[in-house]
Length: 287
Length: 268
Image (cartoon, rainbow over all chains, first blue to last red):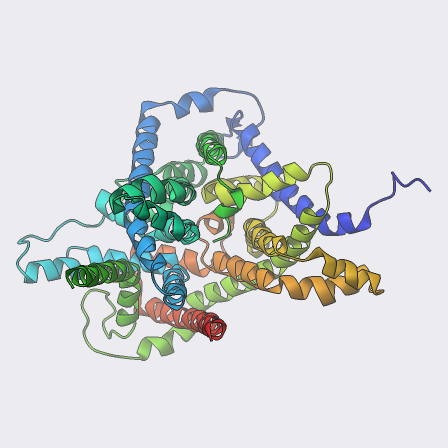
């Protein structure tokens, strides 16, 4: 019997289905999108086979470039706000007793399991001109005119930070939890001030958590078209909005595909940086 | 004395900060719960208390249909993704083969690439292969984005797994299938269950990928709510969301109290 050619049955049974699924419904669709970005659009939507660089030329249209720039800026701001809010939060929680920690972290996950659209709808009502926030501020006399808190950039920022905050909290928490407390004791024994110890020891050691969280916040926020749809009042667009428009309303699929390629390149670049900095890919999915 | 006081002040400050972040996370949810008891159909001011919406959402056919679709897709896609993902994770961590690196990379794509890109990629391939958009295309899509999360959670569990237990079972005469069901599976069960829960919660709340891969007759609850938020959400939706929320919160409380009990037992 030829051992080398023997079919490894357990291998095929276990790895076969997952490999087939990933090739058929991830690899091939992505290759198709890549190919489509070089094709022409049909007269009534759809795709005409051919080769053109026109779609990529269109991507560099100033109109689109402006949306890209704004979208990247919104995502960067969202990421920074998430870090600023989450870092002290997870740091303080990590100092609690084990039981409190477990309860608090479960409390972080609960809202996350409520329909995200319902929660955004809640925000719209809280933030509108006749909403609770404005009524409260007017009542205590802090403002005299209701503030425009929704259907503008403020609304979009609140929505994005709200939607993505848990994705920053979870990786940050696990990296702060892993921190070896004896290192900090050593710092103070050696005479370092708490602020020095934080900047020189805690912050560098929790960097992997910040990186993982930033990837998990920055990248999805580029595509969250429903947040801008609901809280941006048709004025603010992220890259996801223009892709959606090309696929659903304008029906220019090849252009939508070319814009998606742009999004894929950004993602691969950032993930590459993350891996280079020693980031573990599994940390991005183990939420 | 002074130091103790300072510590107390900083403790209070820390707690205030923690609760403020929780307030931010829970505010919109509280709003939805409160307004599910509101008599007024408009979600602006609270008129008076009622339970009526909890009775009427059952009779709202489009809403119930979208809920049924969501649950059907959620259950089927979770079961299939969990089976494929679990045995896949076992195989991927056990065997070396040609192309393993490619499969590993492909598994990360649905996790890191913005959902919208997977959404349009699936829409394009369904259209190229003339697969009609409906429950089938939705279920296929949900399985696709769920598998990688199951693989990762199960693989994390497999990492802390004693291989000798499997070998011992086989030495004692158990075949591969018996070993899998009697030894491997029970040991990795916590990972499998959390992978399945993750897959289910991703599926029932998915907006973006469903947006591109659903057809006219196959609206899911998130898509239904999406169209309603633009035009006006009725208190029925608030009531339905409150019910779903209550179920999830009960599950989490049970789960957490088990964890807490375990922690307390370990301490004792």
